[in-house]
Image (cartoon, rainbow, N blue to C red; front, top):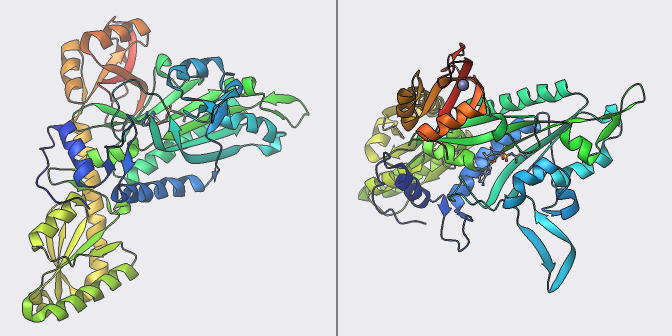
Length: 477
Ligand code: A5A
Ligand code: ZN
């Protein structure tokens, strides 16, 4: 366990704060001796477990979970031209088995289209086999050349959730894209993390897709993080991998596909959105410890206080909470600090006076204190937790909203993008986007923005003055 060693840098210095919190809140150990590879501390992994349980629960409603191999034979990987072009600089190759050179080099999956689709070609026979909706949660490897960062840009992505679906028509695939976006929205809603959904410009779509819809999160330094993408693959892959089905008239047809992915970037978004100068702040839904009980010992009544803490713990656990009682022989203040750093939503204190008065003292991670009658414990705690979740969500939404600004000049756009997302009018042509991106050092994130904070009225391009639609631009991770 990490020693509690003092305060975090202020959150305004975001990248220092981020590196420090990963260490002090015991999320990732960055000392593994390979660039871009990191180790989950058990506490970080427990957050991951709770977070991915939510993702799994949402997916399991109408998807099935599966597991495909990590290694992909070169000839399969090399089938889809655009896909190869998009990934060739990022693939790790296995070329040897022991000292012998392999006949067929094997790619470590950077994503699993080329592992899964040859099997889909065997599995899909008739229209009755469709739709297929599978997902897996696996590690994938990408030889990233941009600056690597824990949870954000990894060379081994340890927690890559990828879903791959097959449909009879383009329209059905499109409707799946919408369902997937709804699913990602529901997921981030549970994490109380506001997301902006938009359609990526053509040059930024997934290699081999018809189009890509992305969910972006605004980080505390104003840069955005792409924290999930949904791709309409059209029939590009079904034509290369020969995924066909017999329609009701007995004709062979190419299938239409989608895929969508989320990685541990969702944990980066979670930590960064909610954390503060005292450490992590976690929504109860994903907090590994939801309630920390701190007994306030007094020499003469130690036994009695211990018994009461044990009783409290049992009651709260029976009510379904993840609870930890801190019996360490430390000052109460040191214990408070410890649990605050780890993002525990609620602290419950039991001292001699509380026992005498038939109450317990509760303190939320926001520092709000409330005395709760001992015999009303469970219903009161439930209300406190629900209120806390709502406050957390509202706080995050307000911060996001403040960082999204509609602008009408390049100067304003530069300023807005320095602090978050600028909404501009853009005609859609690549030339104007390049001008924008070079003039003010931003990326065009996308169009068709679906956000209650963004007005979707059309206007005139900020660069060329032609008819235009709203687009969002930002500095990105
Ligand atoms: N097959 C599809 C799903 C796919 O691979 N899409 S993707 O390339 O866009 O990746 C899905 C998501 O994984 C991205 O939206 C991004 O949030 C995350 N991701 C991509 N590269 C990553 C990296 N090097 N480290 C961490 N997360 C990454
Ligand atoms: Zn233009």
